Length: 60
Image 1 (cartoon, rainbow, N blue to C red):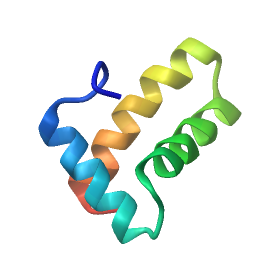
Image 2 (image 1 turned 60 degrees about the vertical axis):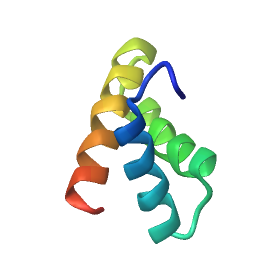
Image 3 (image 1 turned 120 degrees about the horizontal axis):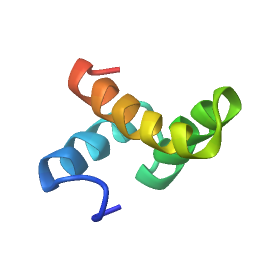
């Protein structure tokens, strides 16, 4: 995950995962799976990155 997110992003992801009662890997996988269900692989991965950033920033 270090390649995809800054240290600040990773802290926010960890906080969001904890808030939602998941470990970080499970939380990220859930977001990626949601995107994969809706889009092609490349678009889904890019979309997951932005979805994760948005959810952590918004506190969702």
